[in-house]
Image 1 (tube, rainbow, N blue to C red):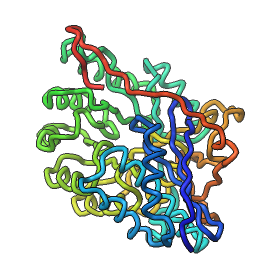
Image 2 (image 1 turned 45 degrees about the vertical axis):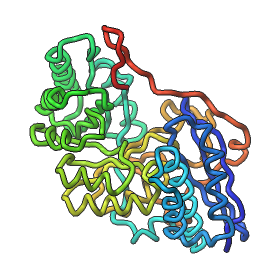
Image 3 (image 1 turned 30 degrees about the horizontal axis):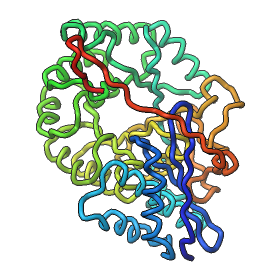
Image 4 (image 1 turned 180 degrees about the horizontal axis):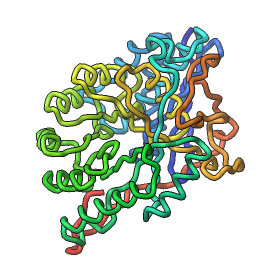
Length: 387
């Protein structure tokens, strides 16, 4: 079996752009993968074409061999766009290898460690406990979900005293606990908007009395000692990792004891093999895995197989496909049969090889690019805040 060609597609998932990749072989097997959309997303197809020339004619089942070639061919470590492209190609190769053997990908990762994978859903638009209760009740009734993620900010963090910001977060979470079933779990994502570590500690500890599932990424990832400082003072589980690119960065975080839960992204770190190395490092440090997965239904399929195989798995981030949230079936997407939660969990499809989903090539035939960029907040003095 040999790699014949690589194809890339500009698509969308709701209001976000998605770059989908196919690797075709000379015996008719096609593997599929999904890039992370750091932006600029239109830069990815020519980059993918460049990388395709390095693996053309190779045996796609030599997954680690080919992925390592793509990572090491550059004089310097690949950055965000390079790793997003390599991640998608790596996913394609794993899909091909599993399809060639007619088994699910998780069977190649040592088999399933568990029968199902628990997921949580973001509900960032819920602005008050009553609204959140209605939103959560609908998701629980339809999909059995019992874990959710929200923003901790109830006030403009740049326009108010930090004591007001933390008190508002405390009061909001207390209100949620008062109206929600006791077994529901809530995580809070600070989206790296905080600059000073003491502020991150104060906000995390304001949430801590009400038992958050975790407090996610309060500061930027670059300075690892700051994460160690926060973790040593915070009284709830601290999670981070979506912005880290390799096992080496995660090793530095873990050695510094900078997190309780890590959140690597298979569309960011270079693919499945790197994810396995990262979760093994975390396991050796008694740290659990909650993969970052804000992407589309193909990335969710990839993550499901990883989470089935990882011994230190905790919970998976999940986004319902367009239309699934409100029961509509008129909103298309590039996966015909996405994984949907049952009783709050995703279930494996042991009778389906590869990722276990069918990609809609007719849908991908149309360029569906939609422009998206991260919004930058402005401080009252006119300066930029962290996004």
